[in-house]
Image (cartoon, rainbow, N blue to C red):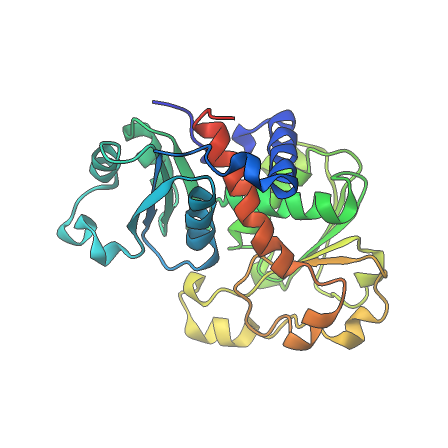
Length: 305
C-alpha cells in the first residue's frame, strides 16, 4: 500500500510547506505541470454531496493531464447493493492510480486506505477530518499573509461538528506564535477531545467566547463556518442556532484593514453577499487555491514531481 492522506497530522510541517511551495509554483508556471499525470487516473468516490471538493479534485487531475472516473453519490455505485468500503477500495484499485473519497462516516477513508493498493485521499469523513480543505486554507493564508505563524485567528460558528475547524486547528497550532479565539454558542463549542489532544497537549494559546463583535478588532484571520443542518439530530436545535453568527458590514467596521475572511463553503446566511465585494473577503480565492493545492498533493502522492 502506498501512502495517502487521511489526517492532516500525517504531514510534517516541512511537508506542508513543500506542498504550498509546489502549489505556488503551479500557479506561477502552469504549463510546466500540464502533462505531469498523463496516463494516470483519479477515482472520485463521493458517498455524500459535494460541489467544490469533488470538482476541484477533478479539475486538478485534468489540468495535470490525467483523467477521472468515479461516482458522485452512493446510490449510483454498488454500495446500493451492500458492498463494503473495503471491497470498493480493492475494486477501484484495479482501475485507477489514486482515490479521493468523501464519506459521511468517520474513519471510512482510513478503511479504504487499509484495503486499497493505491493512495487514498480523505476528502472529508463525517465531522472528523478534511485534510485537503485544511491545505487549501493554509495555502490561502500563506498567499494573503505571507506567513503561517504569529497571528490571531478567530474560528466562528459551528466548532463542534465542523471538521474543517478541527483540521485547521491541528495544522495551525504547529506554527509558532498563533493565538486562537474560538467563537461559538455553548451548544457548538469545540469538542473536549480537540481541546485536550490539540490545544492543551500542544500548549496552544486560545480563549473561548460566544461573541464575535467584541473580538473582531483583534483578528488577523476570521474563519467563518455554517451551522450544518445535516449534523443535527433535532431540527428545532438547528433552527434555533443557525442564525447565531452573521457577519455584517457593521461588524467589520472595527476589523483590521488587512483582515482575511475565510469560509470553507457552502455558506448559508452567515456571510451575506454584500460582504463579497469587501477586499478582505477571501473565500472565493480559497476555492481556486483548493484546485492548486490538490494538484500539488496528487503530484506528491503519485511521486511524479
